[in-house]
Length: 137
Image (cartoon, rainbow, N blue to C red; front, side, top):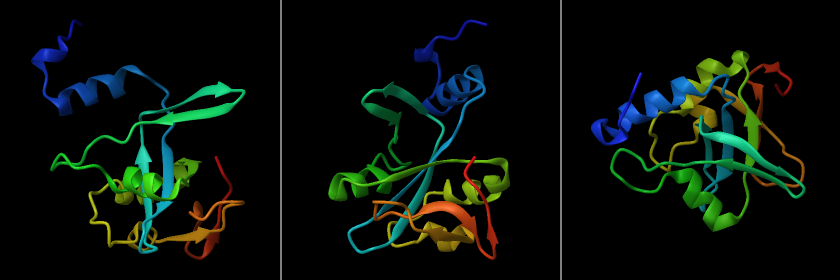
């Protein structure tokens, strides 16, 4: 098939790109806002860039109003974030976290996740689900 990016809407371009690159791990990025609210956002545009130094890349796009998303604002304010890989066990919670919540909503609470401490970082990681323990994927 032949696609001209200029003929597609941004949403259509996203769907084309994400259907071409498979399998595609999803980064679940947690960050903490200036008021202490936890943000947990999935990113399908995610990859490793370098091993030495260790560098990863994820691409926070703009929200539906064209504004910077909470994840990027939080990272710019604190310089900290944690990346988890979404496993199938957490697909339902990841889908909940993909909603466009306002900054004052704790996405761990909204999705039923229980944060667990991340080593050397303030943002929690998403390894635990309420009442159960799960390992990283």
